[in-house]
Length: 266
Image (cartoon, rainbow, N blue to C red; front, side):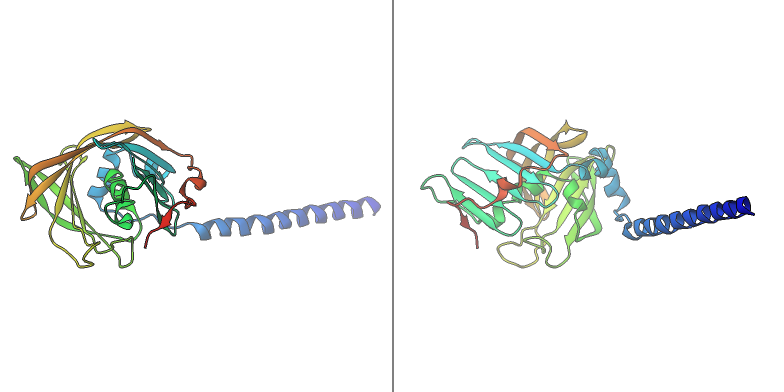
């Protein structure tokens, strides 16, 4: 009887342990299921464009982007935190930054900054980080008429924004891609920052060269174009980029904080 009792006690204790394990495992599984969110639905053609440039998963794994825009009057260096879009743009006479709440301007001499810091601070970043910034939240995708230029027809994808997204949610973009390679070749865009009114007039940039950095096809050169009736006509200034670095390590957050000598832009 003594041994029978001990055996029954051991079986009972073993059963209780198994029940306890079940109780602690199940909530973890349920919790993991609760935080899963569905993937975004992008137009099929846009996914192929992302893939032609290295893939959206690769882009999303990166946390910092830095590049230098080569300019006759002095190079412009930019570093961006890709997750929160904090940014610093360092120019020969001024530095502009954004720390998540304030856009600031720090002047290095007595020269006045020509333009609006709030318009300028992320302007080139959006041009440079195409096509991947077209995967951002708050975007509405639509159809666009194709663009025909010098005998080649480029299919288009229209991009618009939900109200309140970004500095100029009224802006529209049209991405035009090469029909054979699916690489981005043209960007049509409207400007509403100064008028706060929707516009149907497209400006154009042509992406003429790409460079592979950490598995991503990123801009090496782009050319602005004059246009008539929403068709590019004549090539203008070329923008070239060098010293490109993209990394899965976040930049130092202190880079973006407002310097004591800077002024916060209105």
